[in-house]
Amino acid sequence: MQTLDRHLTAHSLRAIALVAASLTSMMLLFAFFDELSESADRYGFDDVLNYLWRTLPRRLEELMLYSVCIGYLAALGQLAEQGELTALRAAGVSPKRLLIGLAPSMLLCLGISFALSEYIAPKAEQAAEVAKLNAQYGRNAMRERGGFWIRDDRLYMHIQALSDKNGGTLYGLRQYWLDENLKLQSSLEAEYATYDADQQNWVLQNGRQTTLTPQNTAVDQFSQRLWDNTVTPKLLSNQAFLEPKRMSLLGLTDQVNFLQQQQLQATQYELALWSRILKPLNYFGMMLLALAIVLGPLRSTGLGPRLALGLLVGLSFKYLQDLFAPMSVVFALPPSIAVALPVLLYIFVGWLLIRRYA
Image 1 (cartoon, rainbow, N blue to C red):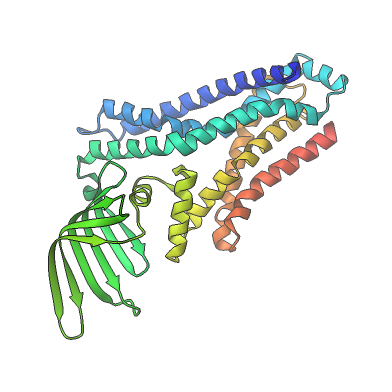
Image 2 (cartoon, rainbow, N blue to C red; image 1 turned 30 degrees about the vertical axis):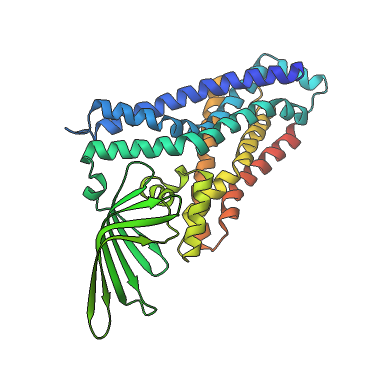
């Protein structure tokens, strides 16, 4: 790595780290008071701190892109204030060469974001939500909240509670099979069900099945019964505890495939999936736009306006994402296009600014 690259990388990473630490601290502070407002006899001060600690990876990952944008504006703006950027441009260093020098810091931030979103944050977030529910309601947390529903073709299931560990045990399982005319064909109740990972099936325990026919109603009691199904503990845990945007890439892929197989609406999961796939473009777009702004409109401004503009750019990007996302539903726009349009717009604006001021 050349001296220029090392200088730009070190300067940028210091600024990005400082911004990320500041934004995360502020978010944690707001979250702390918000969680305290929910505290009660069961959910106390220690539980709040435990919840905030476990959700820290998710919060850091969510703020990383904004930290990159503001950090680059601060770092490059400081170089411009000190005359270094002007000297580099006078020496023939092109904007393209500056982007190459900034790329290592961008790739490192992208790698940290990927590690957080794929390996650390989803598990920590799920553990945080389970711990919070257990602290608020006790071990029957999901029963207190009424459980949740899931569909597999014409089979509709209601699950009262999951085990804390990866959803490998279901409690209070109820199943309803419908015929082609969507009339109830049979129902089943089981006290609990455990997942056999080797056989990839469920073992139902202590239940009964009721079968309806035009002639009569048959009831079959059982102590144990095998149940082959495509629903896995991971799918159940993701649906029960994680929002689509907080799931891993693999978890989102599994969820989208499952919902599409069942001909169910998967738009929210597809949007989250494409957001993950196109994340490198987001980081490149923020780096390009920051450089373009510093080379142009903010070449001689102070730190305050640059930080304010960085925050404005980040918030406007999120606003555009939130604006374009519903278009995939309202206008039947493919989720990939709805996710790509905002970042492509930002890259286009950055390219135009560099062409104008370079």
